Image (tube, rainbow, N blue to C red; front, side):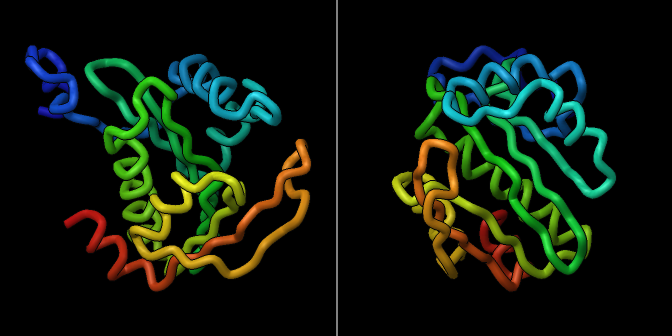
Length: 171
């Protein structure tokens, strides 16, 4: 069943399965460690994660690789709209498909809960993240100058409709 695959000893690290599962309170410490590594200038507090996890309109998942939390993502949902609140991958595990798995899980979740579109903000200078989003059908619809605490600009990206996108990502 799910959760048992990490007992298998894989000769190559890249073929260890990435499990996405709902974030639980006991994940918050691991998640916060990744948060501070990824967003040192404007990281969320532990308290913010507790509040997000308790929110009725929120859905958060973690990416688990061989029993270790290597990334997380969350959306806020008020159908037909969904908003990707955050998506982060442990710097040591980047480039191995974790971000794509997390994004796929969020698109699927939003679609199943009745959303027809998803929006997000991404740093204008984060080309890797933008590529991840455009690869699955997000388009830039606006920009916000000085959106981040360090003065960086944000791009607003939107994906709609979600139905075909979610199917395509998860195929």
